[in-house]
Image (cartoon, rainbow, N blue to C red; front, side, top):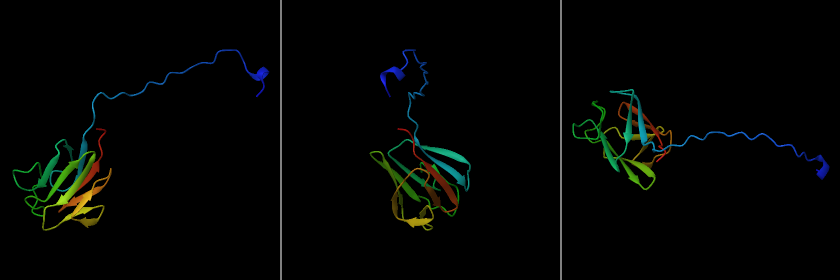
Length: 122
């Protein structure tokens, strides 16, 4: 482009507002099927136990879920799920696992309860 093709007229500038979040959003388990569904469970602790027992962090009142079925643990930014030797196992995206690192939108199945893991912004 030559110098005489440039215009000296000002151009309009548009400001686009940016969404600024002052708070972070926690990782979530969205329960899609099973007793208690639908519901959303925020994972705010470094370790949570899921099972049918009264004393667990996330209770699923179903006989297809063991008393202490699985544990979700945080290691830095990563979360992992571990089967606590349950009778029916833990399935991540349809595959039975003993332990697995969770990724956004993974499907978790514990007995007849089905969850979607949603990665937070924190």
